[in-house]
Image 1 (cartoon, helix red, strand yellow):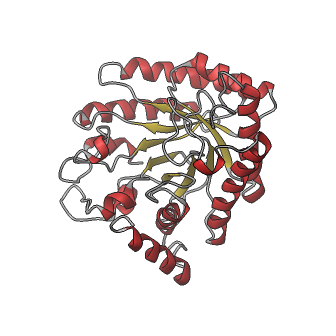
Image 2: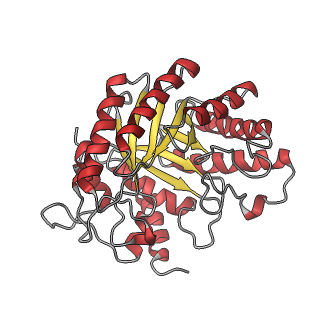
Length: 341
């Protein structure tokens, strides 16, 4: 067992026994129609187990989610993998982080990867346990995994506001059965299986289909026209955007044009599920996010529901990720200034 991981399971058990997933009495949850200002912090428990600590601007040590809340964030996004070899981001680890977010009164987005590891535009690998399943059984495995995770949340009184059925599925998921460029119908059926499973447990949750490269209108039209033509449903469209310090202005404008087009074409809002910028350019990152946030908020909640930074708490070369928003001393950079309400 990886060092520190047993502590996570003990923390989870204590949480369940003591009912500590309940928000503190003085924590007021934001109204569900407010703009989501959030972060994906799925690496957090692994970072803590490795000894990483977090500090406010004055150098005072702080629990990371509390620090992000103090910086103006009101929502947390967490990924879940089916059976990861090292345990991180499985259901138990997910629940530890979800309970902590819930205690702080923060809204929750669940990000199902439907894989044992990373699912993204370049890879959408089936979990090992699902590898040789016939298609109908694959659909049921996806639905069962979705229901079981959401049932664990419901047992603790946690209701997610958003649930992603797949992560950056610009060419579908669970390849080859659900590879959109080969089998759009298969992708649509798998996506619909996730949608139905979510609604069975949490009818009010907004189901998101999440696509990379939010500035590429043609990609979004291809995917969502394909899903619609095969009868798949969704409640919101998820986007990622990772511009460079040199092209963020044009990328923001292209994303804005895409959001307007999607609203007209499909009558569903967008959620910006992931953004990031090189950690060594915090002032540029601040300007990029401030500009994007102001523009999408001006469109109104019918067009954009919120914006999430991807793993801002990463620092010091964690996992080789260079797009965090904390400096080498573990303090937040100006990149997070726009999240203040």
